[in-house]
Image (cartoon, rainbow, N blue to C red):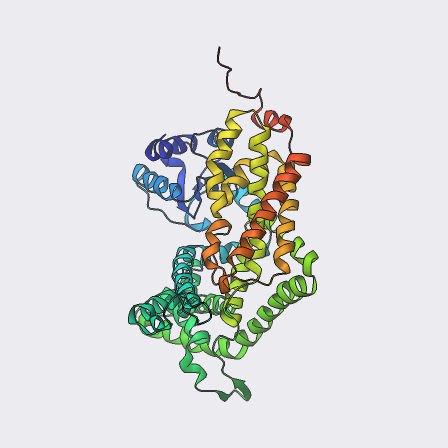
Length: 479
């Protein structure tokens, strides 16, 4: 199928555009909220040519892979006449069975909180990747221009084009608080510019020039970045709640003038007095546990556990909650030592997928693996997760166990990444201090670990037959 045909086929299986409430897409998935699920056959969607998997969550998430998902989403919008967007539950009339299902899947406040964090940071990932690659190129030039390397003339570092390259690469990271504040306000239905101001309250250098001050009898030390991006999220959420509360009570004639004024003044005071200190303490505790305890004290065992347990977090969408930790590490020490270790989880499932491809004779499974494997190697793991290892069951476990070996190796090396983004081979240019070879060795170890564990203990042909519910489809022998 071409992209338009695939969009039409997905829409048909979702019972037509009258059943579509809203839809949006992330890097790999088309997420569709429907009115009535009763006649939707999830397995039929999975069997469509081009679909790599389906996640039946509060929204039906069709896994299509990077690049393709954007094109199919655009076709989906063209066919339905609905703009890609996300709506809150109370903005549409759900059928009773769908509403009950929606409520049931809101498993916990923690799950909902992490979903919000994902919605805030996922739209920023393309910018992280592009900016990180630009900084990676600048760092390579910097390393090659080192007198000890003797490859490039050090004078190149004083050229205007090199300085411009470095400046462009750092633009997003220097303004990250604003972007996170804006996305947080959007997520919680506040005015986006007020969310950006909430980010500036925490990150604006001009405020740190004030230094110590006394406010309401409290001695405060204004510090740029205290509380990090977690502080920005909480502050922007607070701004949104204050704004909505004030607006309900404000006469229409005064709303534009008074509501933003009260929001900024009250929100800023609470942010400086309460949110910054508490968020700073929380971020410090998370960083201490994951890096100081799990990696530095835990060593090989800690690295193994982190890499081996990361894939389950990805399947639940909980991995997005670690993005503020990565960015806090990048801000404070220049790189995140946590990301390369966690990236081994994807490498483990790559190895597991190769083992499945070699052992199975079923051509449908082989085609699924061959379609999902290239982007899995590049670091986009959802197609392999939802299309291959997770549906088969045991290979998901052996992929996790195999990934742990690479995590254990990298935990001894203390290498970091200069930004967040895809893992796999795509992370290589983003590895700090030119430690590319060490990271590649970690990938190879995880490939081998995932392959070996799955080939020896994780896969039987009966799993494919059970998955498809029939006999395997194999190539016919030529006469």
